[in-house]
Image (tube, rainbow, N blue to C red; front, side):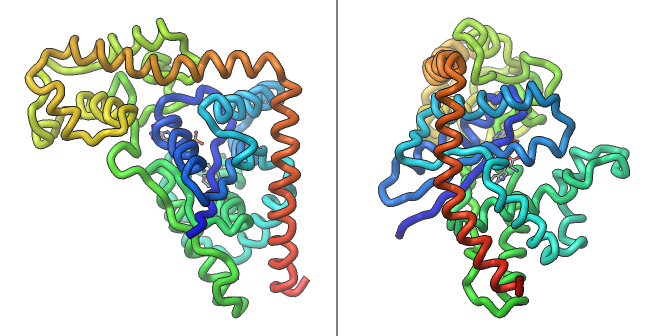
Length: 333
Ligand code: AMP
Ligand code: TRP
């Protein structure tokens, strides 16, 4: 079966190892599986739900694109573009916003987290953000959407909206109901300073994350200093309970080695931490520093990146405008 893949990453700077393992690495694997058609979007319309400095936003759009390319997303195989170049996303978002229900949006936990205590002061965009995400996905008839665990609830909302549209307008199967693709074991990479907190671009401590633009030395240093505990390496999965930092580091190790957690535990069982950390640091550096060097190189040629985005947008627009036209017909415009 041909899988149609769609996913997006916000251009809000500081892309990190969590984005790589939770999302971008899978984008590349999916692209390289035969028969898949992949669309990867730099979701700049989503980024402005929080205030952005215009100059920095422009740079971040390029940096995220460079991270896609440097990680192995190939513009000859996949469509790479930024959302604001394709008007159907904003149009689709309005129309689907008239299908979605307030009650559904009110359940979204990410809004609650991002809006914080003073919900009244959050932008309307932040509130309706999952509807724009739904438009992104449905405009391309995506069958599968690779995301980190934190986006699962948004995906469920997309499914509800697609189904309600199809029912309300008596258009069975017109909007494709998408399936989330969430990595089972390593869908949440945690902070290097606190294993109970997600690795995040907005964490004030740079030591909490490995950025995709870190140098080899920075990477080695951050892993060396990553929080651990006093006990030796565990010899079985059950012993990871209440050891979130250790579980996270073993998760990173397993994921970058494409192996399961049991295997990693067996490799290091009973050993001391420093020997594990040394191997892990090398592995992370081996995976990430070629990407960071390539990002820096790509960013020196802004015209090239802009050209990739423009060409990608032309291809994306063909699909999205056709779909939005069908949607408009169905709703009576
Ligand atoms: P964002 O940067 O929030 O737009 O996220 C881009 C993608 O990275 C989404 O699919 C997220 O689920 C994923 N992601 C972000 N942070 C993490 C993390 N700490 N662990 C795993 N996946 C993550
Ligand atoms: N909301 C996603 C995030 O913050 C990014 C995103 C926007 C997305 N549109 C999407 C992901 C469509 C998958 C599909 O990570």
